[in-house]
Length: 114
Length: 111
Image (cartoon, rainbow over all chains, first blue to last red; front, side, top):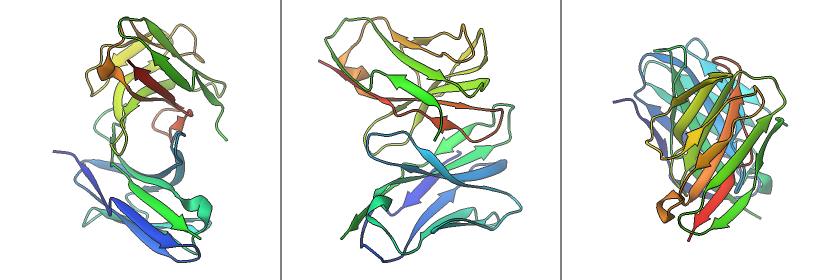
């Protein structure tokens, strides 16, 4: 069964600290993996996208890694800011159809405290 | 910032009422989607469209219906709202196999 599991479910860190969020997936065949940020009451916004051949990608203070062999990804946030408080969602796409079906994780709820 | 809009942002309505959630995008994307998301849970695809006059049901069974008469417009309709329909509804659009851009969502409460 194709699934995307994220951990931790929630995380609280102090402003300025770093953190790492995890994503494990069983989706096959694999096309790409995206990390989205969803602020409370808003729609998700794409942070990074990685294909099978990529193992790291950065977007400012966000760095995503991908290990396609172990089917694991991580999102590392450096020097956290209050505005980083949000839900971070891991989304995996298969290539089993022209739709490129998406499988969503439940997200990690990150809270950054001053 | 993506040019995709949803109205209303919040809606409180009584059981049995007919409602239409609006979604429009100005990016010219052929693909559009409706998702349902409950608090702390993953997004579930309920409808999608490849283009004008194309609509398909998604993974999650839904009593709602959609239409795609124009490229930029993808409304979702509930003929008779029930409390079980209380949720957040997110609209998204994309080019084929590309990143999806999400609207701000509509939070629906059915009393």
